[in-house]
Length: 215
Image (cartoon, rainbow, N blue to C red):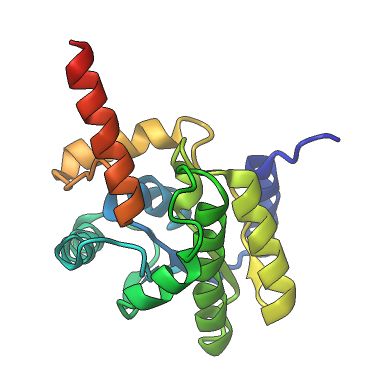
């Protein structure tokens, strides 16, 4: 089975919008300012964007607050051709832990992560429908550690369920991840060293301890 090139799918949408002279409204789920940096720089040329920060997986609460403030700061400072606004989602860690029950020991990048994708994208799709947005998508695919194929599969399913178009994408393509690290340095963004949840934090700390022992 041939794998879908999601960057080319995004190119098709952008080309069509440019031909039509349209600037649609996009609800962009963001996990953190660094991951959103390149995505905002790129997509704000073609869309009027609302950044939706909904991440009940983030641990601890102080980390959640720090990421929210960095996201707001980036939006305020980043030049954009079309408006970028911010929508603060509720912090609901109990929803994440209920979702993760029984999957606590699954390694990062497995089924627990896929369910977390769905949790956050479902909330985004609901907000996109309620706000009458033209599209919704997520910054998550910019990370080399995130499964873009699974994200787009879930997004496509939710688009059918909620009646809002999903913007298929793989933002790590065309050096998107590299550009996000450059923008992070340029704007002095706080860049965490773990995905966000308590399980990813523990896994990261275990890896760091193992690396120290090998030295």
